[in-house]
Amino acid sequence: MNKLPQITLAFWVMKICATTLGETAGDLLSMTLNVGYAVSSMILISVFLLTLITQLRSKTYNPALYWIVILSTSTAGTTMSDFMDRTLGLGYASGSMILIAILIAIFAAWRLSGDSLNVNKIRTFRGEMFYWMAILFSNTLGTALGDFLADDSGLGFAGGALLIGSTIALVVLLKFYTKLSSVLLFWVAFVLTRPFGATVGDFLTKSHEKGGLDFGTVGSSLVLAGILLAMIVAASVYKNRDMRQVSAEPS
Image 1: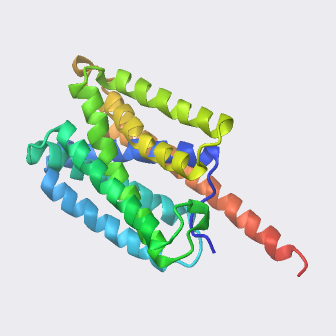
Image 2 (image 1 turned 60 degrees about the horizontal axis):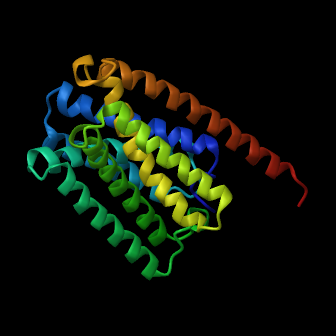
């Protein structure tokens, strides 16, 4: 059975919400609580590995578990990116290029493995591992790219979010009005939602002097967590309803 959710509008709303929450929660741990990027990365990578093992051992799609893993990749990606770009001093541009190269290598290895990159056809353990590796590094890349657009490009947080949001809208148009590969467009959109979430997260949390709304990491994280939790509950209810309907059908 496919252990991944159907790709619907609700999926994309939850993905953006989870990646935005990953940015604010990652900053809450590393900056607001002053844990530091290196220690935060080790903590959050450990959480990611724990949730990933649980997901891999699961036999069916579990909405709560799936989105917890997505959230753990997002928070870990935030601190991993900040550690590379700030602590190691690579900078946003260099960090983004390194992560792009890693992500391309993951997709190339995935394609050469013979497993489908179509998320609706992932049925093997190897394919699922490639899927989660791609998600982890796409979220890490998204933080670096979002920071580059917000800080180094001069666009600011709102400008960066507007640019990425417009690019995502273009991908949607390409999906409905061209014959470009749906698999390619899915992964482009998946990668882009992360810098969009990163810039939106920074826009919510940063001070007015830095061009943000100054909601703070705590307040923003709580609001986003509440929205995501409500949508996870709704997804679980729909899944259970569908399972009851299937079991009620005559064999």
